[in-house]
Each structure stands twice: as C-alpha cells, then as structure tokens.
Length: 359
Image 1 (spheres, helix red, strand yellow):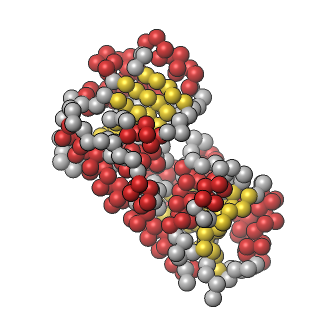
Image 2 (image 1 turned 45 degrees about the vertical axis):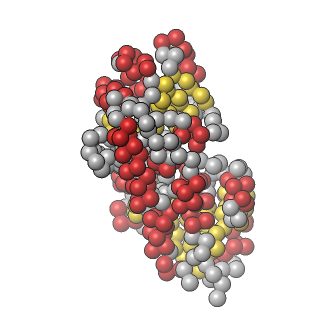
Image 3 (image 1 turned 90 degrees about the horizontal axis):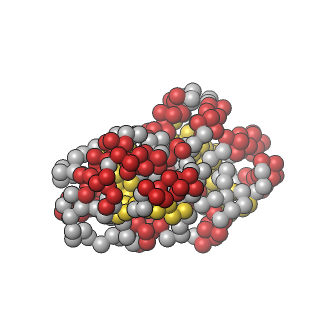
C-alpha cells in the first residue's frame, strides 16, 4: 500500500518562521509520511530542494485548485497542513470528490494583523479541521476571535535537533556582567523597540552597553535618526545574513514584543547559549519560567511588558550579574530547549495527530 503523503500548503514562499517550521515538520516526519510542499514563488523552494523535499510553485488560489487534483487522485489517504484559510477550504472542497481519508491541520502562527491572523480562522468552525496554535497566547487570541475551543490544539514550535547540534555557541562567560546586547526583530511598531529607546533615555548607566538591532521595518529610519546623536551605543544594523555569528558575539538577546506569537529567534539564542531577556507577555514570555537571576534553575529573565522602568532595572542587574550566573542561565536555557523545543520533543505531537493516516 502506498505510503501517506504529508501535503503542506503555505500561503507564503518566504523563509521566515512559518516557512521554516513547515520545512522542519516535513523533514522531521519524512520517515512516517512522504513530504510534499506547495507554496507561492519564493526562497522556500530552494531550501526545500536543499533538504530533499519535493515542492511545487502555485500562483494564487485558481492555480492551486488546478494543481491539487493530481496529488489527490493518486492517493488513498493524506495528511494535510495548511496556513491559509482559502487553502484549507480548497482542499475540503476538492476532497468532496476524492473522499480521501485525511487528517487536516490548520497551522496558526499569528501575526501583526489580528483580523487576518486570528479573526478569519472562525470561518473554519465546525469543519473537519484541527486548528494548531503554536502557543497558548495564539490559542487565547483565537478564542477571543470566536474560534471554537474544541477545534484548537496547542503544538509549540521547535528547532530541528540537527540545527541545535550544529549551532554556533557563545564562549563561556569569564567576566562578570553583560556588555553586548542583541535584538533580532523586525523594526515595526508592534515589536516595541521604542521601549528600549525609552529605557536608554531614562537610565544613563546603560550607556556602557552596546546594542545591535538586526532587522528592517517601518520604524528603522526614524529610530536611526532618534539614536544618532543621543545614543551612539545603539546600532540599527538592518538586515543581516550573519545572525548566528552576531548571536555568538553577544552577551544577551533582548526581545521587546509583548504580542509575539512564539519567537524562533529566542530558541536560536538558547541553542547558541546566549542568555535571554523577554517580556512577561505573549508567546515569547512563556518560553522560559519566571524565575529570579539568583535561582539555580533560572533559564532567562523577564521584564514587565511595555514598561521601560522595569526593563531598565533588569538590564542594570545584568550589568553586574556574575559570570557563574550568566553561564548557569545559558546552560539551563540550552537544556530547556532540548527538553521542550527540539524536534525529538515536539514531533511526537504531530505523529499523534496524524496517527490514523500513518501506515
């Protein structure tokens, strides 16, 4: 009997978090299911080819509607992952004809537009689909927009084991205190980089820290102008193709967004053994437990979201943290990554979802 295909329908051909998770899932389940990717034009196809994953380009819903029957007519059962509402509906409509036994997951990674990211998902209510929220924060947003609780399953994102194993790592701390802080984020209003700039206006003691912000966005030029004369220790780098190298040259990853659905850059910092400082809100806040710097189990620190005074307090504390505390934080975070956010820890959740169509 023919092995079951895992059909992954992406709404974007980019290579950001959603697309990277699609590839990691397809690659991680290839011993159980035959991976097959459909996506609009973009760099995700070249990466799929590099990983040995079959991929097909489609240009809009009409083109997808024309291409999918070739896949469905040669199948007896199928596993489906989709990220666009229209793509899930197209599969459901076509399967009225082919009547394939299937398990259909609709992945919800969230985003900056509440209506598009969460609001439209209630169209899928009462259909034979499980909506996969990548964090409890995403689940809460779906519920707030009227999605049925019974249809939501939380399956958190992860890094492939191979990526964790091969990640460049920061050398062990040998001196007390942080000196170099990195932010890996789009520079858009929702990301709240402005909170960091407010902190620097409030706390002169942080002038000794070097801040590098990697990413582009709407606020980039305005923020470059704001720090040009007042805060020469802040460098808005823009796009960087050397994020891994930048991470390992840093002492701390700072994440400012209180509405982040998840935060793969945080996992990459944990893999690189770079300590993290996160807001106590959103999907990012749930990635580490809320413990004090002096706690032996500490895997990172939180600050009160959208609160410049508290962020300043935490950064000042980290300036005097001992090397032992910083190394302990990095080690605990790396262990937490393996235990909770690695492919061997998370892919079993997908296997359980697809159990009835895996041969």
